[in-house]
Image 1 (cartoon, helix red, strand yellow):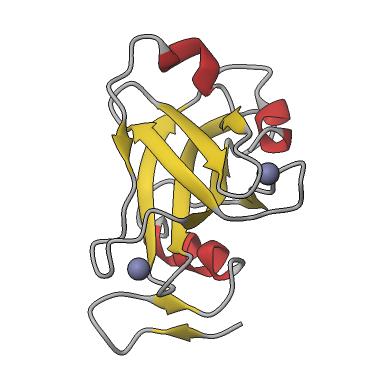
Image 2 (image 1 turned 45 degrees about the vertical axis):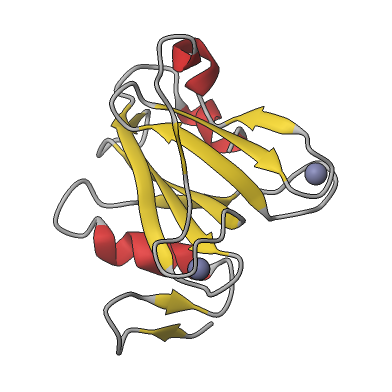
Length: 146
Ligand SMILES: [Zn+2]
Ligand SMILES: [Zn+2]
């Protein structure tokens, strides 16, 4: 796992580098305690991602089998959302790896906040495309639904 931090953007060589990026990105906010990399049922980890940061909803579409999956609790909020498609600001690619960072409350009984991290499948640039408050119980099950 190598992250090139020499340029303007962090570039990850592997999808799991999203975790390290989110750890650094969230260090001054609600720190990310848990990380899950999104993987399609078909085994693919490349997606087209749409998200609405305001409404707190995101959907990922597998580029291989076209399966669509609402990330965490997004399905509930999707109808009211105004989503944007994630595309790399450097190379323009819409294919991305997706990983979710979860900030838990101190007693680890519930999720406080989640972050949708991305890594461009073409050039490796890392970023955080959306994030929103969870703050209800039970919510630990969201970690099984990235
Ligand atoms: Zn798939
Ligand atoms: Zn790119």
